[in-house]
Image (cartoon, rainbow, N blue to C red):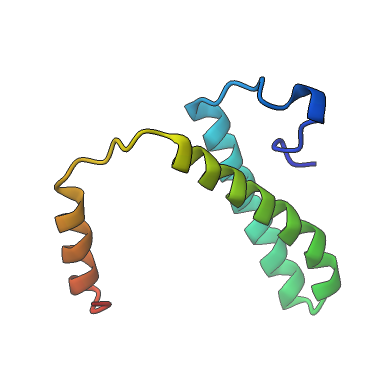
Length: 90
């Protein structure tokens, strides 16, 4: 079961720190690998539960990111644009 799934009475009491975020990212990596493996074996039905957990984790991480103060340095926009140009995506 995903570490994000927390009973209602305990929600909002979890401490969000870098370790928790890293565990979620590691879990997401494993979920993607499982989903890929099942898809390659033609077992798409079994993927659904893993896709739901992955979706929940991604939404949770996005919520954390949205609630966090913007700590990105101003120059990162220039770097991102440069990278996109280098990859011919812009």
